[in-house]
Amino acid sequence: MVQVVLAPDLQENLDYHLPLQHISHLKNTIPALELYRQSFRPSDVLKEPYAMVGVTVFAADQTERAEYLATSHYQRFLSLIRNTPGKLKAPVDSMDGLWSPYEKAMVDEQLSSTIIGDKEKKKNRIRSLY
Image (cartoon, rainbow, N blue to C red; front, side, top):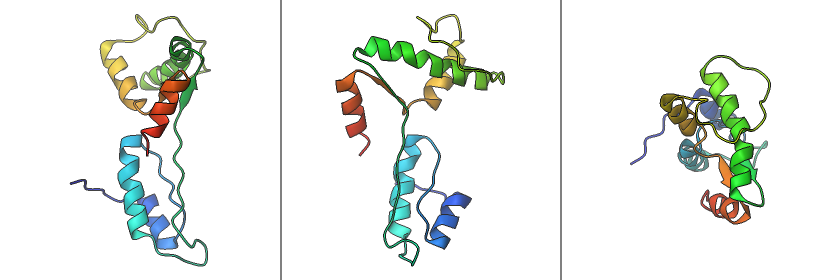
């Protein structure tokens, strides 16, 4: 059984009959959407539940190219973990040597819903969202 604790913004949306706004890991989004739909009450503002899900996608003709492009995103999150934010860095051939195993695990967890790949891989991952 999944237990969902309402965040203040979700409760506020339910109280005011507004669309769902929820920023979180994708794995927490589905339970939040289900709760929102179950708890929704129509109003003059909104007749039925309304929500959108957004994910980060790096797509290219080959998965290897998409993975290369995604290294800029990895570096961005690595800089946030290290509390050294800055401009977006150019992609690199390998992240090896740029992060520790612990930092890699943290970035991987934060970006677990990011879709990276060629057309087929991207299509399959997007379909798996619903």
